[in-house]
Length: 132
Image 1: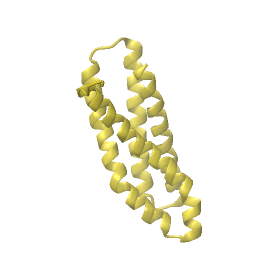
Image 2: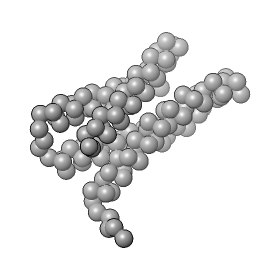
Image 3: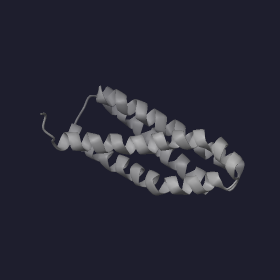
């Protein structure tokens, strides 16, 4: 049997955080139309419930991301440029999700949700690229 080490734990926690953060946003986006048909207040209640696990997952992602950067160490310029782009997308994901959560208009709700999800998906894509 293969042993477990700190690198495995670090990557597991990072993937776990991404699964909850990105997967949760995709799931919520798919459920909103159904929830609205059930009860107009249901999407907000479900979003609040998701926030209780989504934001800790985002913090886990950022924390393990820092751990990843420290563990990987110095890399070439292409790697650093890809990492810089990923960090921008991570920031957009968090800012967009925060704006979505605090929105007071439908336009801001839509814009924040879109920026949050697109940022999360692009951060995920660039993260996979960095791991190759």
